[in-house]
Length: 602
Image 1 (spheres, rainbow, N blue to C red):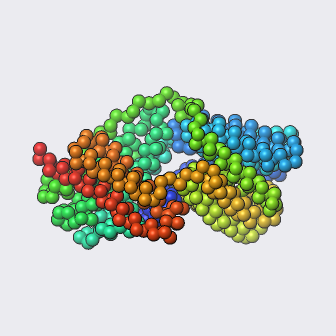
Image 2: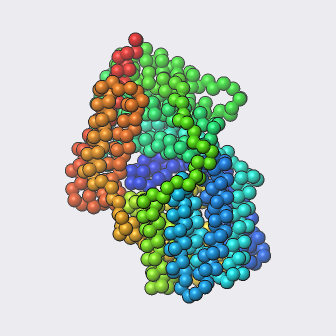
């Protein structure tokens, strides 16, 4: 019962992920939120106490610097934060000073600065976040045209806020750089546990996935996505030499467990063997996963982990008493997953390689041009409709247009929904709070902390708190009428401009739904053929992963932007093909684990 609220959140996440909307409750980070609250609260207090509205730049610089603190080894994080601090200060000065040189200069300067920033950051591995945040600084600076002295004051305020946040993050309140890996590993484990519990709950009843439905194979999909998030995060830590072994071990263990659960899942679908044996294996897997979670949560050095060794003995004892080869093979694979050492890691790149310059790709140039076109459209809309805060619409373009059509479509919807909800909540709070500065300042500090704590959980929820923060701080430092309404309208216009740009310039819709289904079937058939041919284990793992990713692409394509059109044109006729994807994967997994069961006595 204690796990039920988290389980319900993951149930929602499984349905959102199918539609390209992320929800990862395990990534909530209270420590980062508290640190961000301090980072924002200190300069906000100073700005309100001194009455200097220019110090608002310190507030937002501190918040943006906290956002820039992405998961990576400490050395890489310091370089990324330092790069943002220096380049952001220069951008805050140059954008503001140059925009004041002649009327309407900002309309030309904003797109140029963003284009240059994105090209520069496109040459840095994992430089997308820095490029986005520097683009935000550029359009905001252009939105505040000032003479040299005031532009210099803005830049100094930005430098002060960013420096304060930099020192807080790296020196005064450091947080273990490996925490994101711990959370990502935990997310994989709980999703495996959800999959095992779903099999236990079936008992001897029929499996829902016996026929294809809109959430078909939801646990297989969500585990694969969690595994891939952990894998990509480990890639970001490639320059680190210590502390990664438990997470590589978790990844290897999870992959093996996942394969066994896929085979067992297909066994439940096809009613293979005795129901009591299938149920016993599912229960033993659930117990082993709970034991793994228990031992991982134990403080190091207190006592030797005892739960997982007990669960391993239980798995071995169960395997000896099973008559069905599939169930025995799944049980043995689970035991081997926990006992086997992880494979040796690939050679590490040279230190600092994450920020090393690389050739500029064609895709990066196209992305920069899309952003530029979106900004031109926004500034044209600002002139036409007289937007009060056009830089908010420009910010929306920069943060929404982060990839192809599918990503931009999902981000556009999330940004609009989050902005509207956040604007409505902020309006209500401003009405209730009136002009009382102290309660509003405390609320803004709280909102900054919650936003940072939730930034990796869900983008819509993050935008809700972000919008409330920006509206309330702007109302305190730059009072005006209709700030919340302007924020909502500007974000809608900016988000739609980003979507229009990605539709008109090099639109990439990917393969058609039938094409994705065909690719998925081919990938899953290659997995089945590799198992049938008794290929080496490493090769089978590679093709199994490719098959899983291809299946996700095909299933997600039914629910993205193109899927809305496909639904009206008879795309559900492809249900048989979508079901074939998972059936092939399950059949191949059963064949592999049945072989393990047949050889258990060898």
